[in-house]
Length: 281
Image (cartoon, rainbow, N blue to C red; front, side):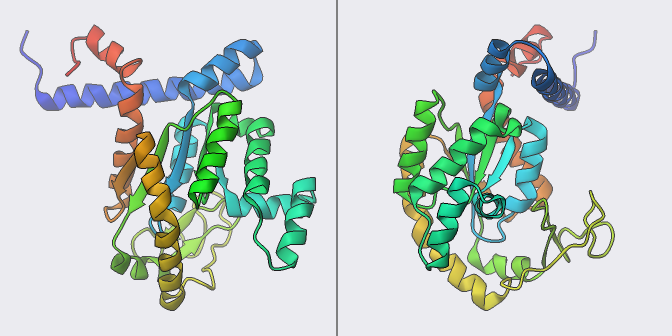
């Protein structure tokens, strides 16, 4: 039998990764409608994705987070959206947060962490894990988050930072288009929707945020760097921080993200399958 070529091996590896991801998705869906509680719980702990997605405005979080959500059956917790939802629903935490915001104050770390905790406990989408977007912004918040997860016998797996030079963000931001309901983002030049100003999935109108201007961006970037540097240092110490070059095309950024996730999952799943068929390497 002729030896397999490198490209053939790589193609087989990719196929195996795709099949296993699909199996995980199907098992997760079955777990949400059937099976005993203990089996669902053990699957959530072993195969879930629990991560923070960091990056400056325009780095691509709105593009990549929905992809992570779909692939790993996790919930996307964008804290700004979550806060507005709680206020709109007039929950106890929402009423408390609204009172603070109406007075011009900042919502406390305790309220934010409790909102996240509530989502993890009550949102069925969070059963297989979560993607936190916009929190934590300080070391104190990171510590509170770790303590809350520890009480649930969980811990973060990844703190991924999308890195990009500030100068490249101006053209990205000023051409950005948003689907308000889902948070999906597009770009007039780099990632245009299939139809002009229309969301690819729902067909609903896209908008351009009023604060997506070069002047506003510079202020937001300055605030982001001041806040984020200590948080990055915190997660570097814990060993879960991973940098991703966000100046690449969105498809390549996605491949880089998959590399982070699959590297952790490969020894117990993909690695064993590859070794069975003699393709591990």
